[in-house]
Length: 357
Ligand SMILES: [Cu+2]
Image (cartoon, rainbow, N blue to C red; front, side):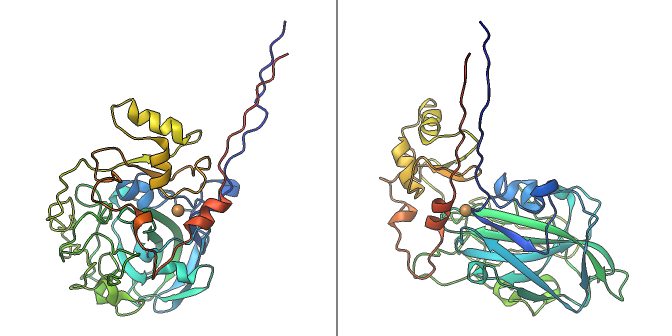
């Protein structure tokens, strides 16, 4: 008897969910995957992908003129509430984790500008040559957690200047233990504000991030100027370390008495029940229904590869019976979100058939 084993079909998720920069075309994976990664970055704010999703420069560079303007466009298949920003680095030869950056633009409430041409101004003091432009997006639809996205593109800057200003403050995005950016809203900023604004309540709008370089006054930079609620301190010029000891690491007053929430990164082949079992096998008390519920999934059989699922196990800060409200208990008013659309269009399924003869 001959046994044949055929893998008949493996259908992967269609790349419509979440979002990405589409103009200029970002650095790619390879071939047809050019710039098309639109899931949250792996590793959250501590991973290299948060700095740039792809580490290698590409030959096809976007011309940028110092003192001119640049058109950006992003495409959100799931128009999550949140904010975007633009950074620049000239450390094109360095490993991502060693690159130093500076910010030139805030793009608040970027979902409102989904699929539009958005023009930013380019500082006149950029120097001539090859630079990396970085677009990022923190999505708050799962507040107090966040999803993180980034895309980089290579640019050739035309400028009369051969060097950057001496007082330009450049810093690593993966400063300190962790990252320049808070991992979630439960981290307290130096201002006393939560790591990220609550997009669902009636609280004030603020944007989280470092100030724009050289007090740049364009591109909504005032939103993260020193003194603003979401300002992240990147330290003094040349300090290299960022000096953000005050705004990260839960060093503030939000010390949780409960066990911290756990997050599960969905991988190919995951199911809600398999994920629940993974945690119950470790002695955690949680059901797949609770996981599905807590993460606002409409269809528990459709989970997104790359998504971060919160595991609301008993006794954790995410325990629905605890004091922390889960996102679905929070009124969704001012800034509604496209999560339902995302779940509607994204079906991640793996079909395998085994044929024996
Ligand atoms: Cu998403």
